[in-house]
Amino acid sequence: MSSLQNISLPGPTITPVSKPFWDSVAAGKLSIQQCNSCQEWVFYPREHCPHCLSDDLTWKEASGSGSLKTWSVIHRAGHPAWQDRTPYVVGIVELEEGPSLLTHLLVKEEDLAYKMKVKVSFEVIENHTLPFFTKEETQ
Image (cartoon, rainbow, N blue to C red):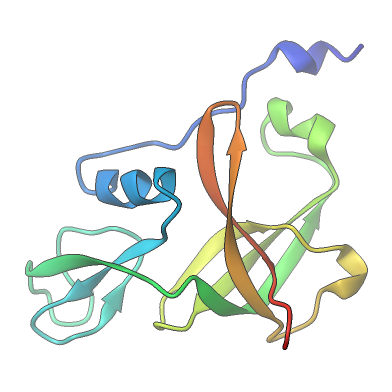
């Protein structure tokens, strides 16, 4: 038995600005901000639009679809609680709405490809719902 099994995974850091994001994730939705002044989509959660500096941001449900820009296979976890879960894949996903986010990928290493279409999948780990991404199946 690994001594790491007694180490809890750290949960997300929830701030007043990011709380709507985490509330939507807990409800099985991916929400990001959109600026009401310039109409640009914004991620990560912020108080001001990085495009026009307006503070008139609204939370809207995103499509949950995007494409893979880059990835890395993690063999040595940055936190001891993740070590038993190695290897795992993290990547940068560009959402259809435009913003990119760093996320875990539930994709086999041999299936990873640049610009691969992915979709959000909500996973519960130690009582925390987290947005992961999977390969989008083509019809």
